[in-house]
Image 1 (cartoon, rainbow, N blue to C red):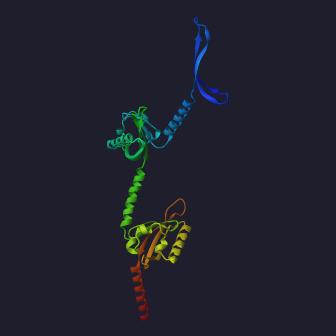
Image 2: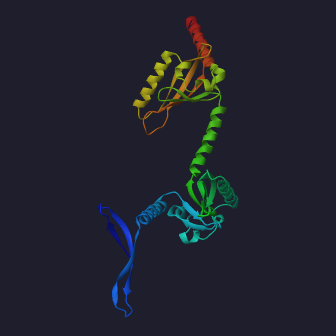
Length: 308
């Protein structure tokens, strides 16, 4: 058996496999060769595609695995070996509950059963934990899919994992920060690069009469005078021009929904970004009582100075 390209009358090259046998007469003398030629273009293309997929699976960073129908691990890529910290031979042939808590294995099994009952759904994403060779637990987001044979029967499953431990930690931290921000009495906000509210906490409503939903998407000029907006823009420009400073303070009059003004202090900072200016965050504090005390003190000092 050998492979050679066969050329058509139009000059097209087609990959063929030739299988030949000697033909002999009754005396054992050679008469010639009989053979069969078979077009293997599709086969070679499938083999090339399979090799490309194999290379992709082996070299992609995310852990990947294939399970047999009985649930044992048939194949894992290098990403899975690195993720679990075991040798390749210590993983293949074992059951997933060696590396995944049993309740998570059971949850994935239920997801696969649901997918088999819903042919329109191919993949499903589920969060599971993995335990590496050192006993460290990692939270992963895993896309799982069942495999079926030619008869449509369950033949195993495949999965692709992604470590989301840091993302989950950031989400927990974000939740804590959101709780703190909502709990403080001061008015905490964030603006985009155009001065439009992207966030403001609930404390703003008792002061201005505006709810957070009414302000998000609106320019900060809704609750500031034009003069204060200009001074705020100038403060931002000054901060952008000074590489050693990213925060500053200014006094302003907050304009309420009823058109009243409240003396306030705005402590603002540039939002961190590697892509240039993306906006600001700040805390607005009502200082009308402080301003009133300052005015009374100034009047008292003026009277004393006059008497002296």
